Amino acid sequence: MVLLLAYSFSSCGNDIEKTRIFEPHTLPDSTIVNANIRRSSDGQLQLLMKAPVVRQYSQPEAKTEYPKGVYMRFFDGINRPTGILTARYAVQYDKRQITEIRDSVVIIDLQNGDTIYLQDLTWNQAEHRVFSDKPLRSKNGARITLGDRFESDDAFKEPHIIHQRGTLEWKEE
Image 1 (cartoon, one colour):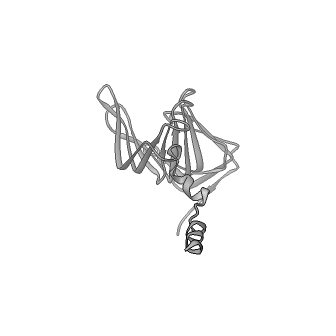
Image 2 (cartoon, rainbow, N blue to C red):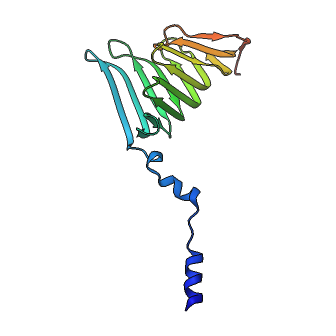
Image 3 (cartoon, rainbow, N blue to C red):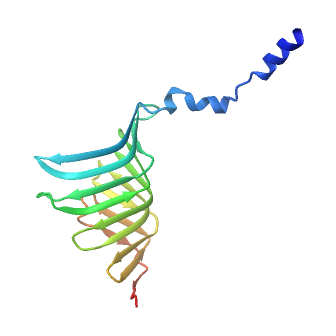
């Protein structure tokens, strides 16, 4: 009997790393599935955002996470679409006013046909600035431009490719 009790206590063990996933600060305060978010100003649609999963956290830092990616469509003042942004991951830090967009970021300017491919993109809301410090590729029709960095205002009205390394003409036969 004593041997049976000793065995049962010795076989009961918790790996502390496995139980950490259930600590309150690692769990989201809320989770939204198949989110469709619309932002407007004075009755005019500015943004339509779709995300398969949205998680909101208050601890250890207030943030909203989009772990399965985002699709954003931007509109002008008369509800015409002007651009699209897609990515496989995004996180918005509330207090810092920073949004990080990562993993296969694509920006499409629907007015002039430019498409920019980036590894990541950071939006600093306080400075009204969008930027990336990693190499990128831009495509407009048959032209492909490579660059080291990207900067723009947060309305994407003044996008700049920094240190352009060349433009290639791509012709398909």
